[in-house]
Length: 105
Image (tube, rainbow, N blue to C red):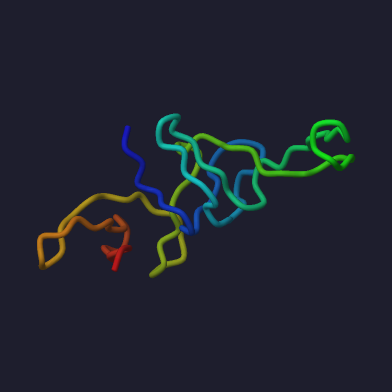
């Protein structure tokens, strides 16, 4: 399944423990259908001195499934689905379904 999310997109979580939280996409992992979002699904990782040179507990974002997030429409500032379309030059662009706003460009 092709992802319609890109890095630095603003999204809102629609399912899971962080439901309702907005964040920026840090990384898209298309081969697994997952995304990493800033401030969402934060987990603690224990670091050892031997392997990493520093010790302690580090908090980092873990990935979540892309079906659990929706893109925020820049026109209405609400979650929206995304469809693919073409602009005047025949180039592929992403379009917000709710408002018809072109997201790329």
